[in-house]
Structure formats: C-alpha cells, structure tokens
Image (cartoon, rainbow, N blue to C red; front, side, top):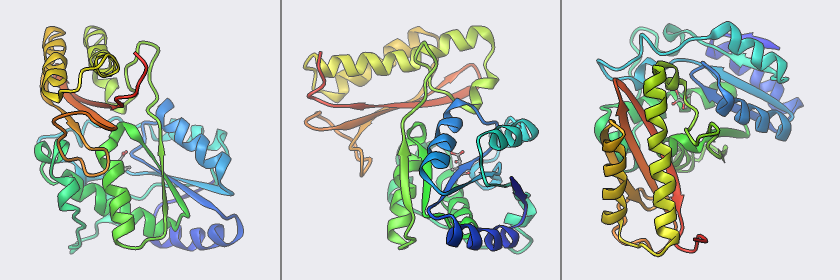
Length: 284
Ligand code: PAF
C-alpha cells in the first residue's frame, strides 16, 4: 500500500491507477476509522479495481470554537486497517499542502448548503465542498463513496459533481448502526458511558418516527414534536429536527412521498447527527 502526502504525488499515482486498475474508487475520510468507514472501504475495494482512502482532518470545515483541535486522530491504526483491507493507496496530505499560504479558492453550493447543519455551522459546507473537490482533483476517481449518515453532505456533493461536470459517480452507502441503533460516528468517542446510553435516544426517536408514518401519521409537525419530546426527555439539547424532501432538502409539511427526517442534538457537549428515510408505504 502506498502512502502519499501531497496533491502532486497523489495525482501522479492516480493517473496510473485510473488507467491501469479502472474503475478507481475513493473513500474520503477524516480518519478515526470506525465500522461505518470500513463499510465504505469494503464497498470500494470490492467494487473497484483499486481504492484510495483519503485521511485529512479538514480545518476549513470547522468553525471557530468547534472541535478541530480535539477531533480524534488515530493515524497509525487507520493505516493498518487500510492495509488489511487491500487499499491501494492512502492519501494523507498535511494542511499546508492542501491550503498553502495565499490559498484563496472556495466552492459554494448555497442552496443545499443553507438548511439543516448549514444554518448552524457557519462555513461548514463551503469547507466540505472545497476539500472534496480538491480530493477528487488529486485522486481522479471514477467513483467516490459517501455515507448516508452525513446526508446533507452526500446530497450537496452529488449536486456539486453534477453541476461542475466532474464525471465522478457518487455512491451513497447506508448508515452503519450499533446493536442498539446508534449511528456510528467518530464523535461517539467523546461520550462518557452515561452520555452514550442517553445518546441512543436519537436513533430511537427516528425509528419511532418511522413507525408513526407506517401507522398513518402524515403531519411533519406532529412527528417532529414527538421526536423533540423524546430527545428532551432523554436529557439531550435539540439543535434541530426537520423533515425534508430527499433531493432538495426543502421542508415537507405533509408526508406524501419519501422524505428524510434529520436530527442534530447535543448529548452533553457533543453534537451528534442522524437521519432516517420516511416512506408512507412502509409496513406498520
Ligand atoms: O465526512 C467526512 O468525513 C468529511 O466531511 C469529508 C467528506 C472527508 C470531507 O472532509
């Protein structure tokens, strides 16, 4: 397995991989790999001729006061996991290779970046879109794999690649959950044992919402209020609960077709997100 740390060296290797081992897959990550990432890497290594995993904690997607400095970093264990999974190359640039002095180009997807997390995390999606474009430009993949856990990110990146004619297939991958339903996230590492047990309320509330829709409830306001109540009862501070149209992320008042319910909530100091697909024709 190769480990590459500059965009120039990555591009050079990617040109060969793309030509000789097509299709080339990319799994963009910020490291601290968990089973959710492993499921993406597994898809990429089994579906592609070669897979690149990028590991880069992107400063541009953290606002002032967020957890850039404390974000979990497990670089050596991550490299080992990639090696074991048959990854062809890990791309792990340093911040000054990605954003050298004088760096001044940013990518904005203003519509899809505005609601949900975009309304709460200033500049977050501009940082995400910019770094993903840079990763795609360096790694030249035919396919890039993104988890549905970061649903807004997935939708926005798909739009960016279409709008900019990048010719990359964005492959959505299902959320990986613990046995009690909790979605895997690198930020789960911040939770104490007590917080971890309270955090299961997030996925539980989403699954309850799905059941309500299956039982015939169609009014978003009622479903959202029940979810907020459940989260507050579990001692979490709700950042938002919304039900949106899956492609445009516009609010849905009445559930007549597929919709995404998205939650962000604080358990102690840790902000967690999760989401679920609601479908009116779900079985009760
Ligand atoms: O989902 C993530 O880990 C990050 O937002 C990504 C896509 C690697 C960009 O930094």
